[in-house]
Length: 151
Image (cartoon, rainbow, N blue to C red; front, side, top):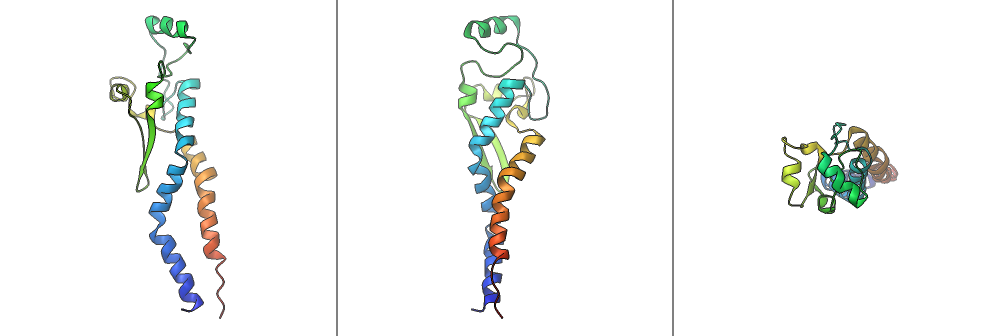
């Protein structure tokens, strides 16, 4: 096989496996995604659209004070089940953040807080791709670009 054939073959392998490589790169950052989402909810009480989730009722505020929890805004964390149940699912470039907690369906319903509570903000997505995923792909492309063609 000539070196041109080798280069062409390397490009094809990269192209053919690109979707899977993207999924793997995103999945590899799953812990970062979950931690970022939880930290934003805990510290700011805003969803993935930047919408403030509001404050707790007086009854919930009192219960939260008794446990030493944040009372200035909704964090969606009381016993921790919703946070502990969070995981990232990736398939063909589509990212879903879910929680296996029993109340997840209720919390993500439009009557409560909506599905955006389990989404990253635009800034978080931009950071993820520019700082974590793009450098990984740049390294892969560099391998192809560095392929020596000797004629």
